[in-house]
Image 1: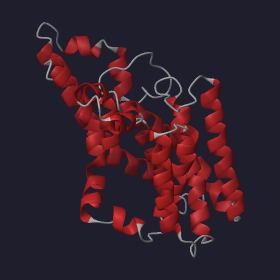
Image 2: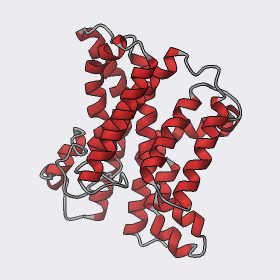
Image 3: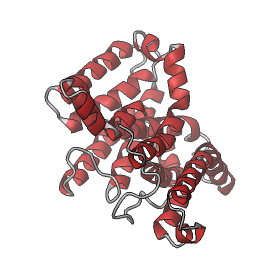
Length: 292
């Protein structure tokens, strides 16, 4: 989430710290924090719900969707409400009727703004990815019975490779080889990575790699991704490194355990969704008030 924040203030960083080349290069690709989250989300959702939903049932589907709703939507609604309040304060001559007449507002309220309907960013910009993520939540119960039938970790790994490869191919075909798709093709980007994470969970669940030094493999993936980002940008391979990192983290081995299992890292993880959903309000407010 903090990486995405850096991305959204990258112009300020470049102006204030023009000589900090590494920081600027890191900030420019901060949008990839969304990709890291989408892979992680797919892995976690499969970990949490795949066993519950392996037998299709309306109660199970309803329960899983309700749990995702209460986890994600209240903060989305709160953030959007703050944007409405900001709009009313900054535009004294306009009232709620103007907001109600804005179709983009209603699409965002009902999380339809990340499904290819928008032509420009409106209101709380980061919510587009939550919209795309919700499309995955709604589709996951249909995939869960399929996941339950896949017994071979090699088959699951092959599906992860195919899914991520297909995502890269689609994004390259529409002119987004750097995975910087948002409003128009963002749902393909998020869904591809989300379901890649689901397949990776099956590989982890099999126990095939339990004896491997995944802590060191994951740390190597971190170092490789940083190297690729800063010195020779190869975004698709960075996404692969992210997938390796998430897979390695699940094994809870040193040295990754010490890196992300400490109190500071855990706290940052706990507030990450709030940081992600609320930070644009402060960015927009600073821009409106011309705060340097």
